[in-house]
Structures are given as structure tokens and as C-alpha cells.
Length: 160
Image 1 (tube, rainbow, N blue to C red):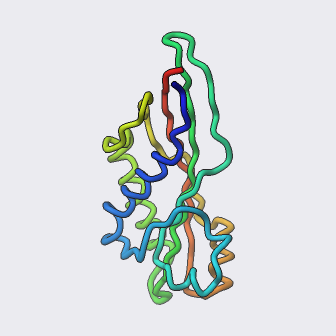
Image 2: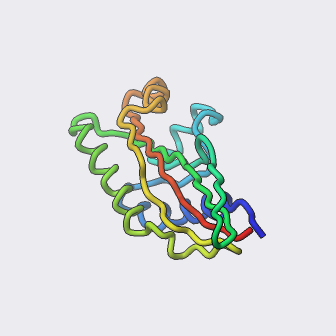
């Protein structure tokens, strides 16, 4: 039976980020959802943090043989970091991005995820936004906050 696996994939992405990046990026937490609904005081107490939410669309295509569906899920990942403004901000942002992207590449098939009636074909980053809209939002709250955003795709094949 075909089903959407969005919650299972989102839970696995949250777990991967928490397990693999909490120490290296000095994260306060990894959170489900976006920044737009958070009161400003809550947001500033949650950084350094990663927010993950489903993004754009989920594409669903039929595969004739065997009878299956191929689903492409997209997730937006936003890292908000408190910066030491005496350091090179761009270098810190690119180092952080490298850590996140390498962790995703190292786990591109989401090996710890078991989907009922489905299989993850791949999970890969498709874009990095160095100055996303969240960057302006966070900088308006505090001059030492900056954001970097990533868009990743997860391709899943599931039986009908």
C-alpha cells in the first residue's frame, strides 16, 4: 500500500542532525518547523540551532514496472548561528555548510530509516542559500545572528 513517508523521513533527518552535528556546530537543538512562527525571544534562546521543514512540493510519479510510485520530497534546512563578529563570518558559514553537506553525503541513503512498503533511493542537497530570507529576519533580531539555508531532496520508491 502506497503512503506518504514524510514524517518518518523528517524524524530521521532530525535525528541525523542531532547525532552528527550537535557537538561540532555547538547546537542548542535541532527543531521541526520553521522560524517564522517563533517569538523573537524564543528564537534567540534556541541558537545555535537547525530548523527542518518540508518545502515546496512533493512530486509523485508512477513507475510502470514494477507497479510503484516514485516520490520526491524536499526539505528546507536552516542553520541559525550566533557569530563572533571578530572572526570571518563567511569562513564560518562555509565551514558550517561543509559540515552539514558532508554529513548528508555520508548518509545519502538514510541507512537507519526503515520505511513500510518503501525504500529511500537517495537524499542529497540540491542548493545552498548563503543569504536566505531568514538571514535578514535573524539579523533584525540581533546583529550577531546569521542564517544559512539548504534545500535537500529525498527520493523514495514505494509499492502501490
